[in-house]
Image (cartoon, rainbow, N blue to C red; front, side, top):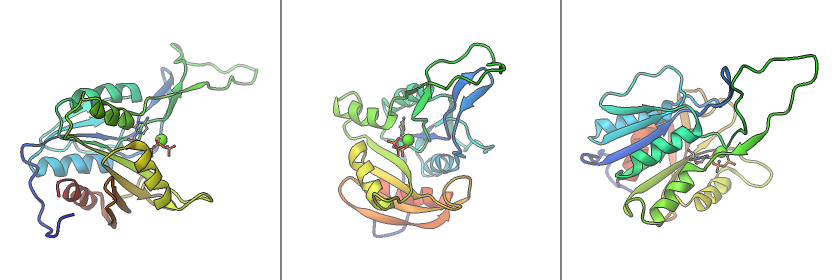
Length: 230
Ligand code: CTP
Ligand code: CA
C-alpha cells in the first residue's frame, strides 16, 4: 500500500466499472431485482475519470444519478446483457471493477404477455443460474483471453452469521473468486444499501488487508483507487 496520500494518476489507464443492480424479467412489466443504488460504482467511475483514466461504465439499474463527466456509459438491464458489455469492454482494459449487484438467478422463462391472475393459486417461479461475470473474467485472464496484467476487482456485501464473521466470509469469497482485490462492505442495520456512507475492508490476493474508514462513497472510491494503483 502507498505511504503518502496523494492520488497517483490513472492517466492512460483503461478502466471498466460495472454498477447498479440487474433486473431479470418475468414478463413485460415485472422483474426480479435488488436494492443496489449504483452510487458506489458511479463514484468509482467519476473518480477514475478525474484521475485521467479512460472509463467505460457498464450501468445496470440505478437510482437517479448524474452521468459522470468524461465517462462512456453503456446501459444494460439483465445479467446476461451486463456480461456481454463487460466482456466487450474488458478486452483491452487495464482494470475491471465489478461493483454491480448481478442477480445470481433469473427466471427460466420470460412470459411474452403480462401474467394474469386467475382464481387458482399462482405457479411457482422457476429460476436458473446466471453466469458469474467476475469469475469468468478471472478464468478468461488465466486462459490468455484477457491481458495478463489486467487487475480484476470484486465487491462483496457480507453479514456475519453462525458460520463466521464478515471478514471470514469475505476472505473465503476472495479465495473462491480469484480476483486481485475484494472490496468488502459490512451490511446490517442501515449500512451499505441505499445510504450515502459505507464502511468495510479492502482484501488483496497477496494477503494485504486494510479497513476502509466510514465516509462518503466518493471518499471510498478514492481509497479504492489509491489501493489499486499503489
Ligand atoms: N458477481 C458477478 N456475477 C454474478 C454474481 C456476482 O460478477 N452472477 C460479482 C459481483 O459484481 C461482485 C462479486 O461477484 O463483484 C461478489 O458478488 P456476491 O454476490 O457477493 O458473490 P456471490 O459469489 O454471488 O456469492 P453470494 O452467494 O454471497 O451471493
Ligand atoms: Ca450473489
